[in-house]
Length: 150
Image (cartoon, rainbow, N blue to C red):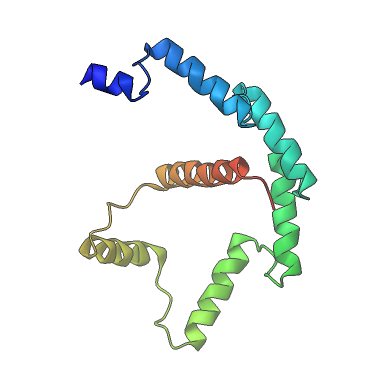
């Protein structure tokens, strides 16, 4: 079989190191870009996105501010202090015929039994909940920062 393949002009099997070299030179002759170190790649990507009119990546503090002003211009309500928010929520739910607001202790108990019946995980003490939410929002922000802002 080997002699047959040779007579048909089939290439000799090459050691792996040569194969890689051949592949590289072939791709070069086809105008394929040289592989770049990762740091350069990021820089190239950035300049490319800039030339396409993509906004500059912003520091996180600015991004939050921009997001806030953006949502305001879209007619989104101003962020309210939590005390007002609760009051607004309460009056809204009353006008929709929703049951009377409950004292917080009862509300927590009702929520607990409801979530358990739906197979939702056990309620967490408030301190843990805040921590979980914080890491969640942090993840969300980081996943945004990987994409160029459009």
